[in-house]
Length: 259
Image 1 (cartoon, rainbow, N blue to C red):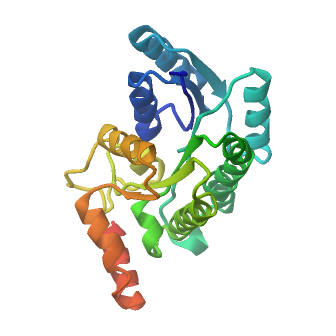
Image 2 (image 1 turned 180 degrees about the vertical axis):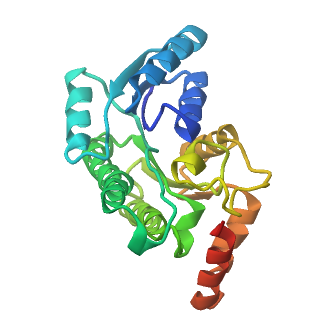
């Protein structure tokens, strides 16, 4: 059986790091991408020693324009083939839309939407041509409703979900699958990066670990599941909002997220 290679963005911490470990444990070689090259190289040493796989690390800030193409070209120049593309890199920000940093908002849209879309478009044609490959786009339970106080983040994740579902329909019967992983609040660096430490969404909650979400996501991707919502409560919430008045959904999300 041919060894597979997984490219994982945002692999230096949280769900991305745990996805790297899960893939390594299954014998996959890795291309790990993040801004923090020191953390990536520490992970590389650990995984190569523990699992006897090859790990390539690439320092890249995908919130910068044209970074996706630069990453793709770098991987090509290294003569590496990507069997699994995992678009995990992303971040959120807490605050009222009209008071939020425009620069941070643009970086979020560039990373959560543009980079993910570009990488998917760059790698998908070759996968379809070879009738083999899998893509995972990390969306969120936030994708199923609007999110006051995190308006842009919720909107970016809705985009990821809808894009993934549409592509899944287009590539049916090609041998390639695409999965939207939709975790809820998770123990990771996300809440600190988004300044959500005091939000009711995270405070005093018994949350799943990044490892649990990564293992669930790996299984969902390998099984070709299109929309993979982690956790029964998240599944129920995601599906119940379809039947509730949108004004009520807005009030509930605001209440849950307020500090």
